[in-house]
Length: 306
Image (cartoon, rainbow, N blue to C red):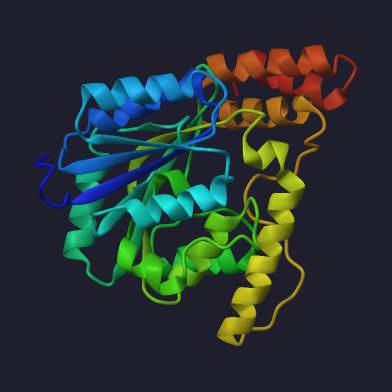
């Protein structure tokens, strides 16, 4: 990329203490088939090796632009990244996920060909901390399907690290809002849907990492409460009736006990035929809950392979 010209896309990656996964995430961006982008690496006060890793990438590739600052939190960091972006298209990414090689090319092409679309996502492959596949998610593709699913609160249909969006639309709706901690992306997508169309591509374009320290598990209750308030506010803006709904995102589990997550991941993997992953988490669940009937039922199904 010529540094004197505006890039076609700005990739924004907030980073906070993810040195274990960071190199795979950045390498997946730098290895894209589409190359005309800047990569904004935003170090939000990391205390592990993340800062040093980012500096090495900046020295090695002119597309990498690193910013270090004291910890501000994810919402302020995302907003600052959007402000710093020089391109009209912003590609979102988390520092523990992995892009498929043709992700940028497909999403940028779609936005170029569909000017009414303000944000485009994709299907995702959930992976665990060791890159083992869990399941594929994302079966809502049209604007109507995505927005109705979001406003109903029954499930997640638009996955932030898999989204590319128009900077002008983000600025129009006011960016991320601090009033919705842990669900700031969900609130943003509800507001973006009011100024343009949302779309998911049917391709799997991101490997979305699952681990117990991620927000959906470590701050699940806060995320659910923020999501419900975002839905209520969206209903008020749109003149719709609001009623208490199930929170979107992760299916309900007891986040105080890892066994619930292990059981869920094992069932998901078994359903789509990822047997090594299913066996791995069935065994982990069994170690956590050796006397639980649900755990033994899971283990029996895993042994049968279905």
